[in-house]
Image (cartoon, rainbow, N blue to C red):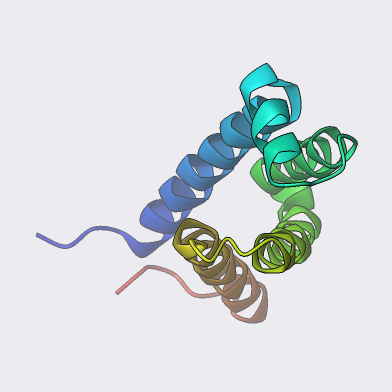
Amino acid sequence: MTLPFNRTVTGLRWVLGLVVFWQAARFALSPSAAHEVARIGIPPWIPPVLGGSEALAALLFLVPAAAALGGYALLIIFAVAIGVHFLHGEYDVGPLLVYAMAVIVCLAHQNHQTLEPNRPHDR
């Protein structure tokens, strides 16, 4: 059984966008997240700013006309988040790397579709 590539990448974009939105909103608004970042010495304004911008980028990523803008914004935000983690001695950034790679796959697929608009069917 072969799955249609366009639908699988669309599914990946939706799952990724919704998961990132949910986690970013929780990070931005959760009292436990505020407590955790205070524990490791991150300024209290970081969770709402980073989480809020990540949630907004995830929503843009879900809108087909703004998916590229949202995707590139997510990549920048993930890079900043990885940097913040590293600066505070937290090296467990595997999920952020997986999210970034999934964004890259979705962006590459979108760019490929733009370059080949007359392609009749997935193979």
